[in-house]
Length: 188
Image (tube, one colour):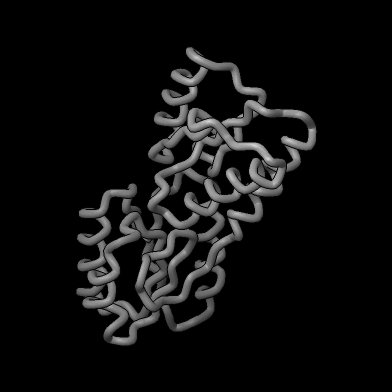
């Protein structure tokens, strides 16, 4: 279950999954939650009816560990979470070190003299986005600086929302640099 197919990152994830299972006895079923929790649960129940052997998931429900535990991991079905961890759920988790990446990128911008750096991120409830926010803040702290609260612009991770938020930002401030946490946010 992926959020959507608008982001080439998700396309690449699916291509890797598909290649991995191509010459095996397993079939892959792909569907999209569009980051709608009720839809994600409906899809999950539909998959359970198909007696799936495992699930690879980028969840929009970081606090709903009980749901996945009750219906899946307590039955010892394999679950792999990508990028967005579900707190308190015992499952495999694969992600980039978003904290270190954003800390390095922001640090390099600060080293070049930029001070009005803005971060366009998704909801902090997603572990990957929280890591980006911590890394961004940490880079400022490393330089003995504190980012202004206005430097943090939260989106719902769609191009449209990122576009709207950027237009709103430009009405009040002119950033020296904008760091985006995803391809869709950057495109917006």
